Amino acid sequence: MVLLAAAIVVFSSIAACGQVVEDEVRQRVEEEVEQGKQRAKEEVEKGKQRLEREGQKTKKKLEQEVQKARKQAKEKAGTRR
Image (cartoon, rainbow, N blue to C red; front, side):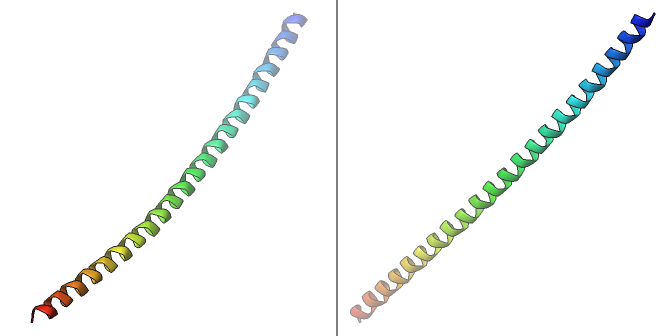
C-alpha cells in the first residue's frame, strides 16, 4: 500500500513536471512566432519603401522624357514655320 501511494506521488510529480515543460515550450514557440511575424512585417515595410523610391525615380525619369519630347516637338514646329 505504501509503495502504491509512493508510486502515485511520483507519477503525479512527473505529470506536473511534464505540464510545466509543455507550457514553457508553448511559450517559447509563441515568442518565436511573434518575432518571426515582426521580422516579416519589417521586411515588407522595407520592400514597400524600396518600391516607392524606385517608383519615384521612374516617374521623374518619365517626366524628363516627356519634357524632352515636348521641347523637340516645339523645335520641329518652330522650324516648319
